[in-house]
Image 1: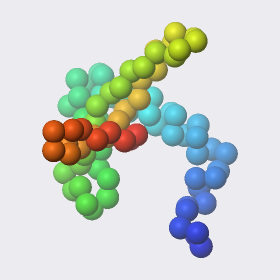
Image 2 (image 1 turned 120 degrees about the horizontal axis):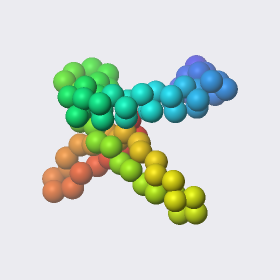
Image 3 (image 1 turned 30 degrees about the vertical axis):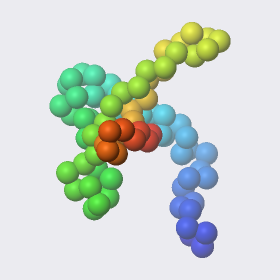
Image 4 (image 1 turned 120 degrees about the vertical axis):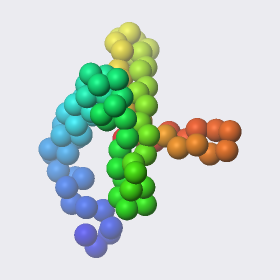
Length: 84
């Protein structure tokens, strides 16, 4: 890890694994009404976890709905979102 980037990010299995993880997270969040999957622990900086919201967008040409779990934090009067 000389450049600071873990080698598994370049693995052929990384993208499919992350897609599967995201689908499972969204399903868990929906099934429990956000009680489970409503926070995501991101290292020791946020021991209680970071809140999660679901963002659903619709494809411009396909019209297919896609839902993604996003982390969010308040920033004054704004909300900052990032992929979970």
